[in-house]
Length: 241
Length: 241
DNA sequence: CGGTAAATTTAGGTATGCCGAAATTCTGGA
DNA sequence: TCCAGAATTTCGGCATACCTAAATTTACCG
Image (tube, rainbow over all chains, first blue to last red; front, side, top):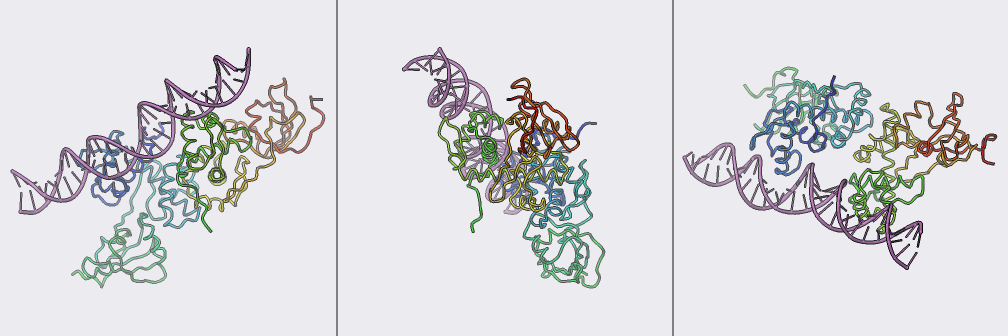
């Protein structure tokens, strides 16, 4: 059987970063991936993104018509998932074996994912016991590039009264992760949406981390970063009729 | 106290590679480090080395007069030893924790040494129990850049009859490492130089790996790659009066 | 001491990936 | 329908690090 490899040119760090970022921007939400969203996420100029997209299209990693959003091809998706696998296995290793805190791992993994070998990743996977999710709850793709997203939604999408278990927290913002860790909020915490007061304002929630419930008020960014698996409706405090 | 950092510009992979290579070329032998030796070791053109040496001189990492060999400054030596420390700790980790064989680790470490953080290296060091040598017997510099070279000499420098314990094997040639591993020759093996027959020809040796002595005949490259700590003269088979 | 071969440096050019500024295309409201 | 503002692409440039080929310098030998 043929070894599963990636097309020539896809060994460039930049190519890998762009492809992985395109995937990441559409992993949890389905908004189209535009040049400017990519530029913002990668901290580069729009013109740099334009150039790179042309290159990615030539490599067969993305489909793109000028002035339109970009989409990964099957080939691009395979490469992206390979990078995501690397990133998440590395994060898991840093936490489990090297004692990193979960807010420290993102940047280190971001660099290492481009430089470790396939062998390294495979041995890491085995040593970690073939984990299915990283420390932030993000699922780890299989070596073949299969991934199953948990049935979770961001906290800000829940109506008043809904309750759920935290299954994922975005690893993008270390400060947010530090705050949550300090408050002992993590994967498995049970959160109930109390209300949004005033309408459109901060989200009032009650969170049980195992040591009794406490109340928190979350801004938009925070509420979008915490992903919750529904465990049913909590009666009695809905403000919506 | 001020954090020990390196000069601006020394975060380039290439700069790090050149500086580390200059150090390596003079770590065990004292021959001058010329452009062409550097070019050969780095697999780049002589002209590339010339350009980079000018840059290194500007950065204060090397002292250099045109058409003369190059030498590290104190600053350059500090950077080189930091890279050597990274390389050797990574090799030790790959063998001890990820089950790499000693002939597999060099290339992987070569890439990773440029991308892991200081934090990563410090935590690795602690996890490995602050090892003093890597799997090939190369000493690991301290975080402060101190290193003590063992009192060893390459096998090809011994006279007939000398005996010693193997304390270091160059990690540059994976093929050589595989051969030695297959023959069960490693650090700690006891080797006795029998003779050089014909004069200047292959080196005849007797090696005891613990399971009884066997005889081997080594070519020049091999004999230069195995480093031995003298344990006294073995009488009776010297061909030199 | 001169001349040549070897080592080294300089000169000119390539590829990647980034930038700001200018041109182009799209989009929504009047 | 038209047009202004936003988004995107194109254009000309910069930095790094590499190359080959052409100078230059060194070192050695007759």
